[in-house]
Image 1 (cartoon, rainbow, N blue to C red):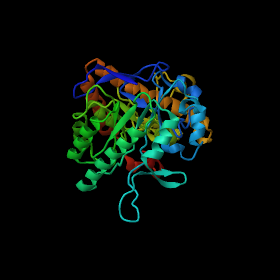
Image 2: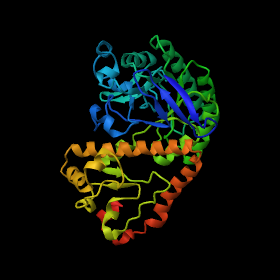
Image 3: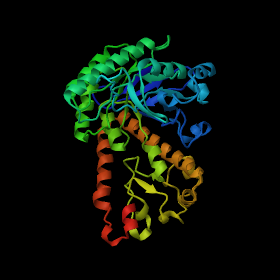
Image 4: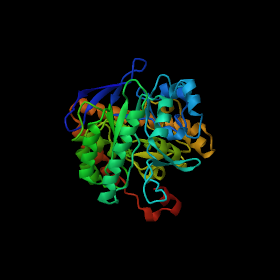
Length: 411
């Protein structure tokens, strides 16, 4: 794995290129990891990945998901996760983020392992078992396990979290298979700036190829998040990539990009698909925010950033999910068709909707890269956040008291 900066590279937003090997094309950053369950997207088959977007080539794989699957020996025999999952042309980034609390033993101490929720209950996974799974899957990039904590824990607990995560990193590095170093060191520290800096500085001293910034999305305010992110990235070398989890909303993505984060593990698009929503927010500064009214019926199924395809408002709507979108779904199908599929519980509804949402979100990342390379990222960020606030405060003038309870709940 190789990483090189193309634009930026100071203390703010930056564009780069990640090369995962000769068999894989390079990927521009900032980029999005596609969310998976046991290595595969929930609604899109592997043969449809090329239809999503040119950037739909990097997938997040959680090693813990393979605890209750094929034995490690079987994965080894097959040839790793790429062959097992039929993803030879894609890059796999392996990291685990189910760990929020650690499991105490009978003596009141904490076991040397992180606790994860699995289909058979909560299990404690130590570095040895974790690296056994990682070495079997053979991902292109992997991150060490972490003791992640919410923001309300004590300073003492934050310090313990950093110490424990560094110990686990050292053990994981010692257990990785011989070959090219593709390890990303995990950075924690909760809401403590001092511990965040210590974690970042100590991790940067290790033999790692990048950094996984953990512990975000666990209760911090947007203002505190910006300060914490900046305190971390200020302590990291500029020539190595950074991955983050827990930040999925577009505003959160932009905030993290402004501090120098390169790769995002987000389930935002997938979550909208499960709810029956399609992304519609503008991607270009030349595109005006979509304004609707109750007269056309659309107001009962939209909020300016997404539309609810389950709404009766789209039963007879023969327009694409988002006019002008070039995704497969918008080119081939209408809102009325997706509405019908969703309300008749056809599985293909989630497939078509996920193809649109993933395409739209990957296009959002393309717009971010264009803004950075064009030296107008700060302007783009202000425009994007401003038009979202404008839509909420100025366009949305519906009198909810005049609606039925069902319609008010939709809004």
